[in-house]
Image 1: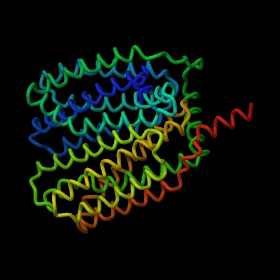
Image 2: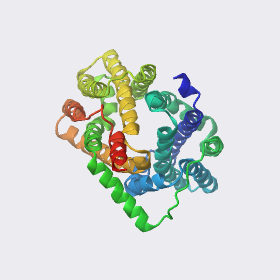
Image 3: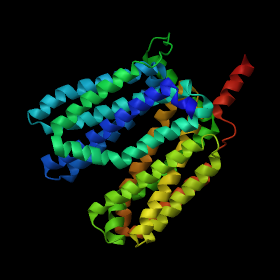
Image 4: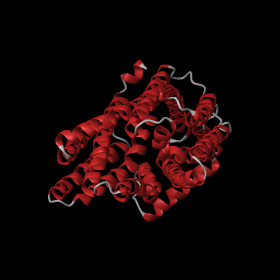
Length: 409
């Protein structure tokens, strides 16, 4: 851990990540409240925010992954912040003139930029963080995300209701500028000697698909992510009914259960960082997903807020451990030059299955009951745990591939 905290690349990526998290939550909460205010609570307009956030993932994820693999990570991340900065300036003027619909463009641009910046930051960690420190690095990243699940909505709500939408959007200019300045201190990466062309992109796409097809662990991960996303998606829009119908509480009380989940994620990330290198991969993932499924079932049967809150805390803790192990495994599993493409293949499947589950949840509740849907979700999450048993944590794919290449030479 001490070596990790002295790693300049890791510290710069983490600092940029913190700024990005601040920007994400200020943006998300400001746009949510602003759209609700402008449309008098029109659910179609509110749901459109989600659509414009996820649509680019399906349209550009794979191509974005290919380009992220080709482009130098430092330059890609800096240009992402610069483009985000430049996109805010005209939108501020348009919103000031009364065209509130322009705020959807902010969400879409942020989603597109993330398709390039996320694989690039992962490549930097893969390249500059020693393998024995990757678990701690992923745990620290998880810790930042967990902390902002708790504090992010509070921060975003405070900024919007204190200063308004113009200041909220203007603050993003400062955040993106600071992030870009920090990233200037990252080390440079070698320039690709091959010119970018349609043929080269198509070839890289095929190479990514071939890489996936040749490695069983990656295919198992893809199936596991799909099953996990489907189960989680079934209950994602129903938590409000869990609070009001099963617990008899007010809608506003949902925030406390969300905060408990975030607290559990934070504690789990701290534990993962302290146990760096000692977490047993397959056992942690299997136990975490089994507990997540069982916790989902217990939550829907519970009529006691303390029990439901306790389960949220416990499942959040184990989910953080699971995410840390899987994130570390992905970085050690995939060679640096394929990270963008593999991310571009897996992410749409995860998002797509989540949206399928979300789309089915309301219909299933209407045809059956809240208890049935939560029980079904729990069983699907346990099925993901069974899929995870097929993972081989003791023999990373990246090392297999490197070994084959060495033998070939």
